[in-house]
Structure formats: C-alpha cells, structure tokens
Image (cartoon, rainbow, N blue to C red; front, side, top):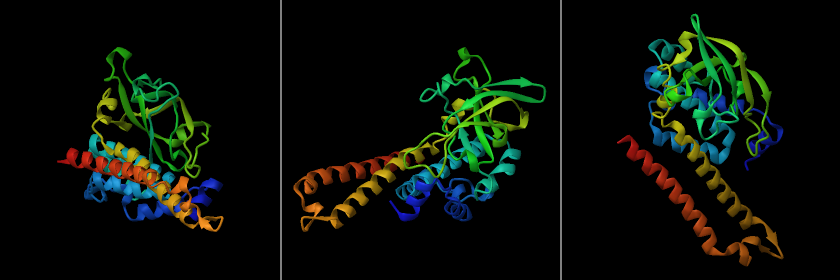
Length: 283
C-alpha cells in the first residue's frame, strides 16, 4: 500500500487533494460530451482509468466512478435545463453527485426498495432510506431512486430524483475495509419535498433507464485494479524480505511458480475479457 494511501485509510482522512486534481483535469467528466466541459471518452477509457485509480486507492476510484455514473444518467435522460445546470460543474467535480439506490432489503434486487415518492402539488414527497451512499459527505446531491407506482407495475414503478444531501438524515457509517477515507453511510428521508423539476427521466422508468447506462463497468474495473496491486505488492515484498539469509521468495511454498503464474494469468484474463466486452458493446 502506498504511504499516502495508507495514511488516508488509517486516519479516515478524505482524499480531497487527489479528487480536486482529478476534477481540475476534467476526469470527473471523462465520459461527458465536450459541450458540457467533459472529455468525450468512452467506456474503455473509463475502465482503464478506474483500474489504475483502484490499484493506488480504491476509495478515490469508487467516489469518482459513481459520480461519473450519476452524470451519465443526467446526460442521457435529463432535460436540457438539467444538463446545463449540473453537468459542466460535475465535469470538474465542482458539483458532486452520489448514488442512492441500495437499501437494507433491496441489495441485489433493487425492485424490492421501500423508499417511495408521492406526488403532492408541484412536486414529490419522499420517505425511506438508502444504504452505502458512497461519498455522501462531500456530495451536493443524491441521485435517489424511489417507487412512484404499485409493485404490480414493476419494473415501471421506480423513478429517479436529484435530492440535495442536506435533506437526508445520517443514521450510521459502515465500517469498511480499505475504504475508510471515503465514507458510505446509511441515510434516510422523512417527508422531504422535492420539486418536480428534480425528476430525472420519465416517471416510473428510472429503473429501466438505468439499465441503459453502462458506466457500472467501473465496479469490475475496481476489482481488477485491486487484484493487480495486491499481486504487485506481494511480489515486491517476497522479493525483498529476507529470512535465514535468503529472500522469502526463494522458499519452496512461496516460489511455487505455477501458483504465481496462475494468479497472473487469471488477472490478465479478467482484464482482457473486460476490455473485449466493452469494445464489443461500443461497436
């Protein structure tokens, strides 16, 4: 683990300097069109960037990857007014978005979410909670998914809203392994009014529209980056650490060549398969 990353993680210190620099380079808008101050890159470039960041500091990669995903939803399904209002500053991390989708009883199956939005007057009233809202404390708003229709209408019963972070109550922070510098708390909403112009996309189509956004590739890219860094650090350590007047990499149990080749091959295959799938999806 790199010294600065180790310090950030041990002390739970937010990586503001790193994220600010990535924002200054407009990498927070990597996949946004240039007309919105983005860099106009694709999913392959996103996967490569997130893999590199994860190899150095997974907390930074997760905060940036999720932010880029929120921006992609706004760019794809938001109104012209919403794009103009949010995207240029999101491209530089001047405005920060985070994702509010998972819940206690809606992890893998988001259709079981309990957060609901009821139409009232000129807007909506939201009640519910979200878990693992990564980078909540540095964010300006949460892309919040809530049911706006009956369960029998699923999956066409979930809508997406941009809700300011100050409207949420923090319930607790999760203890995380290797990701202490960027918190992922559980937060809740209680009778919070959201203006109608904060609905992103079509009413009831938030869940299906999200299925058309492929920036989720940042998640497996993080895994590849972490695995690569772990392998590199292990090789470096075993090649320098000495016991009984020899490097521990020379011990039989460590130098078993097939073991290292197998790990390295699996990592290369994961990287190759990921990029191949992305290239195929963009053709």
